[in-house]
Image (cartoon, rainbow over all chains, first blue to last red; front, side):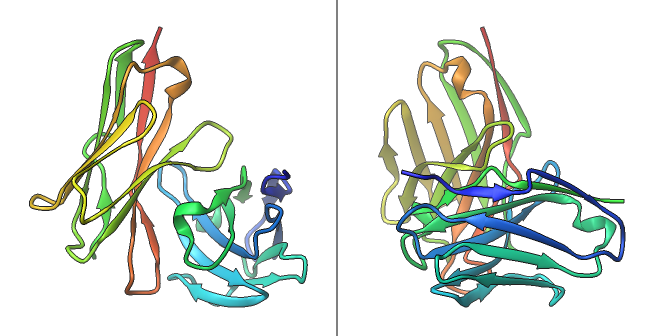
Length: 114
Length: 113
């Protein structure tokens, strides 16, 4: 069984740039959720994708956007990066939307914005 | 706004002792809670969950207690081992609002060998 993988592991960008983070869901999972985890904080829900459609969004501005592909892998795009976007970005996959108690997290992508 | 938080940011325990990690919540409509463990360099890992119609649930070496009267839950780890060293989060699953899963700030558990 393949777990949730994310790439890249680390990334350094400057203010104003754009970034794309990638997530491969666990085999058989059709739902991917993205979270932002600032240093010393708990993860914050960004949005969820279910069968290629957005299925819920947290309190994040429109410059945070996502995609889910037919193989259920997903991308998180952030435009016009700000210093406060520096964080660990986690994706989690689950068998279906709403299965938050059965979601499996990837190791995250550490984004640093300078 | 309403949030899920933790009483203590750090906890150090001797190997073999029991650990108790506390969490307070303020959303009276919360009806489902999850405890996660996050080791360094890894994503959160599900430990145990509890619904509001229960006041106790046990897993392997872990017990979660829920006190709805004072809006408090705790995670008890029996016979704490070095592998239990991690940050522990409680999370609140909500049926309303646009954030389905709300995490607390976390407690770092350090096990002293």
